[in-house]
Length: 69
Image (tube, rainbow, N blue to C red):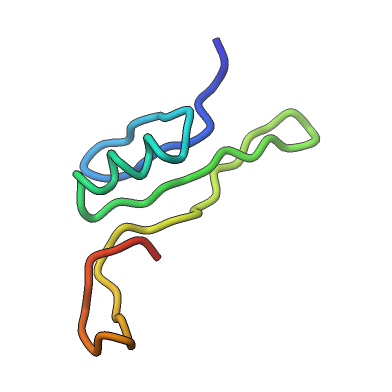
């Protein structure tokens, strides 16, 4: 079985094969962090944060928004 490419850490950790599926889940589970698997040369695996679905300041609007950062 192939390991998942993405994990979303929210209220629980859930694996996904595509970034779009991970984003859809994250939008429904605020706040959430999307991690991407990185295969290491020595055969190990690391998980790197690539997106965070949380409150952030939007300077164009001049207000906080909930979005990916």
